[in-house]
Length: 192
Image 1 (cartoon, rainbow, N blue to C red):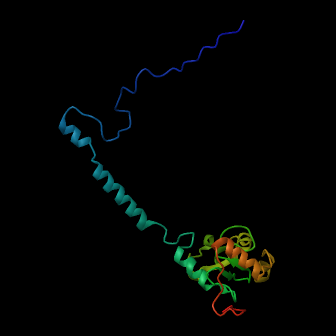
Image 2 (cartoon, rainbow, N blue to C red):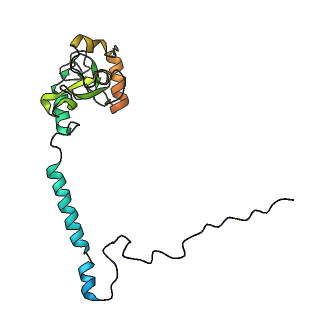
Image 3 (tube, rainbow, N blue to C red):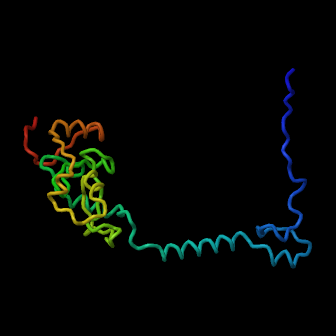
């Protein structure tokens, strides 16, 4: 014989809190007298004004040195990096160690990927400014971490070396942008 399965019923409290003095106040409780109601009721406009004041205080007291580089600093840092002859400088550059990097590949671990690196690490007081920014191959930046004692030769050894031909660059550009652009006066044959 099988035992019958009856659903278990959860026990619930019979009523909500009866003592309103211990319950958290939302500011909109009902009151019997208009005078006491007006003293306890906070208008939504005053709540918004208070929130706005708090946000303004946070904005003025916030960190003036953000950890990540602002967009305009990243743009200028890219412009500062070495151009590759015959290639569109908006798409291709060389990092400070001579590695070829592609503009659209940021933060990934591949050999054409790059990061915007703090020359003096942020954790050691480095500012997020153009003077402290360099385009650096992502794998080198990750291995560098917040250390400053690496020599240029040691960083070059940590580079992900990959030989990229012009044809490879064309294919990468075509897949990322849908077209291929070369730098003006890049030489080569031109069909007229």
